[in-house]
Image 1: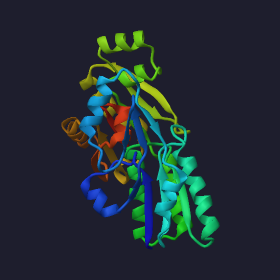
Image 2: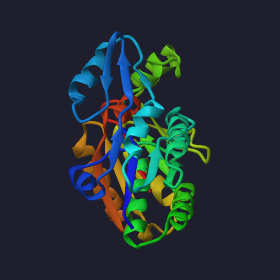
Image 3: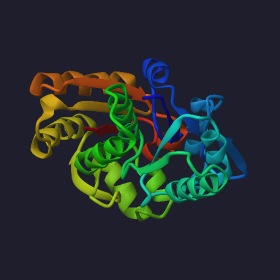
Length: 278
């Protein structure tokens, strides 16, 4: 079945996936102080990271407008949309509004918007699942049913190398943040059933944090041989590859993909951050 997949720019891709999935990405906007960045293919990630690290202000993000989504809906294909968690952004609501607006113009058009309840490589895996089901010639309603179940079952976890953005944003007190940094405490975070972020564990040291992250896969995962593991990294490919190696030693995933974070994911994870989803 011929389809179009549309996602916001939190959906992190590598070159191979970009070619295979042919996803239309709708960029979010990132603001740091008085400078605005569009999270598209022209964004220089190194410039963004340097600006974040040198600014006293927390980076702010804004969702694409409904009109930005509508522009992607106008072609003839059946359209499946994947957004980052509605608990983290208004992007999902704007995509749903765009769907309502386009259906007023073209009544027989098919558009379905998925709330990934995740972000970064979690969105990527949802897009991969949609593409796989379409290649197997499932109809629209079957795809919706199976992808909704996939989203419900999917797990997302991440490790932060730096707490600086949490401190700047006021989500962690400066004193607690500096104490945690001084003690090299690394929080391991995850998504709950509502797509909100929760603290899963905290350990001292980056190496221990990554080992613990790999352990959590075994504690929380089921039927891993049937699943794809996605690993997203913020400017730390070597670290992502080490996670992949450790996972392969312990588990038998169907496949493992590594992607580099876009601007939006990097804002939340910061340099050195790792996100996994399965």
